[in-house]
Length: 250
Image (tube, rainbow, N blue to C red):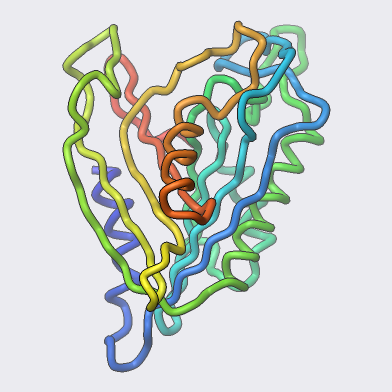
């Protein structure tokens, strides 16, 4: 249901204005949100664990689609989750897109700092407020730059089946959605502007106990596609598989 809603919202910008009246425009931008110095990483509730190195940068990736007077933005963040109160902070910094048209999700990496500020059991929390604020600011920067980079585009859409144990969950080996949906925006010359991938996976590739900060699973997906399609503008919208339910992180 959420997958269908997500794709319908993006498709809505294409259908909201008759073709004769306006052309589709697409823009994309990326901001690095890796903390410097490195911060402890969170696997969810509980105390974050310190790290000694990073493997790949955490990023905020924004895709903006406009047709006529309708503009939609999609933002993907390399964090375990992003609560709505932070999403609203991002939206307030983007004055050229209606707040309700800005969709923000996370890749659900278990190897990034906590953006939830989970309670620590001692009357405090586990979040670094300065870092959380910087993620909000950089996410907004990415959206605003994507608006500035809008240009004529056409859209390619496909859905296929990801075979094998790509999204395998040992708690329930048959509980996962095998569909992978892709939206690719190209300019009039056929050059890729951005690619949006929507796929259900629970990416506990490294976890938070090995001393490594990393976007984990999404890093390999974006690295492959960035190399193939030149521009570093691949967004992974992660639907997360849990043992008994399907949910969209963030």
